[in-house]
Length: 174
Image (tube, rainbow, N blue to C red; front, side, top):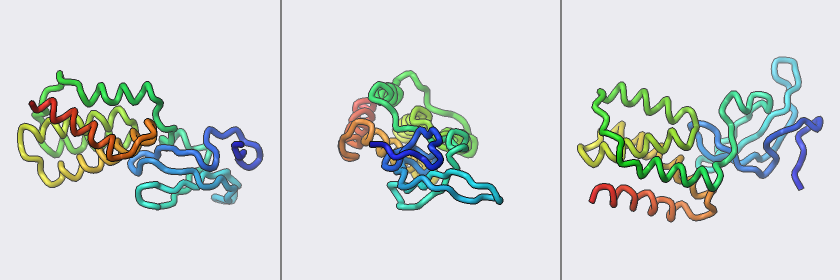
């Protein structure tokens, strides 16, 4: 049985649901409370980021605006793997700082598809040259976000997803 938000507000998330919060990744809705913010009462999601344990409070009315979304579906998982496998993407020739900004913007969207593009592009770039420290950190961040969501969406372990991603880039390098 799904727990209703206070005041019987229609809420896309219930306590116990998993949701994706941009940049931080997968979170669990641990509570839906009414809080006073600026003298007005608001229903808020209390989210616990699975990776870090950090708690975040998001007003329910702003959930969509901040990019809080459901875990991707099985058909969307296939789309993510298609993006990762796309052989027709050329290596990026932009300067590192321009590429960094572009990739950070993609990660900040919280879109699994945009994050998959960052992983693909950085993995491919790493096949041609050594990645800088900043590029390696960005790749770790993006791949971590992607792996956690894909594992939940497919109901498999993160290790299985990491192996699948690794096999995509090992095959592409061969």
